[in-house]
Amino acid sequence: MSVNPYLRRVDSDALAATGVGDRFSQNLIGQATGAATCHVDWIRTPSGGGSPAGLHVHEVDQVFWVLEGTMSIEVDGREFDAPAGSLVVFPAGVPHRNWNAGPAPTVHLAVNTPAPDPAVPFARSV
Image (cartoon, rainbow, N blue to C red):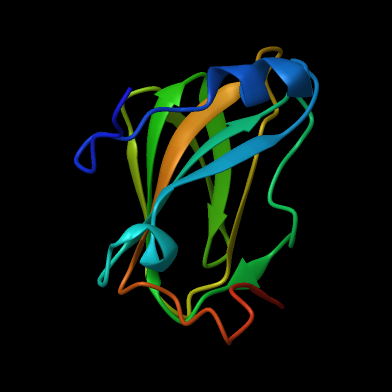
């Protein structure tokens, strides 16, 4: 079977191997897979989980598209709930975090643009 360079899928075997109570993150596209200007991850966060870095900032803009569940977020000191179908914007340099206060996992796409420099730590805790 040939690989389609224009189609990315979540690795269902790797996802199933992590278990529902584990955080799962898969890079769908980035510099290592041919994208020069953005980086996209598919992320499942279990109930009680959240940003591994806690409150943090990035050198690039970050956008989340919430696909499942309700994500709790803090942006620049203000807290919000972002249900499925929400687009969450974290401008570069603005302190933010996300967590899952609900009973079921959340799933979101994380889009970072421009593509982060792989030689620089992605998140800086504040």
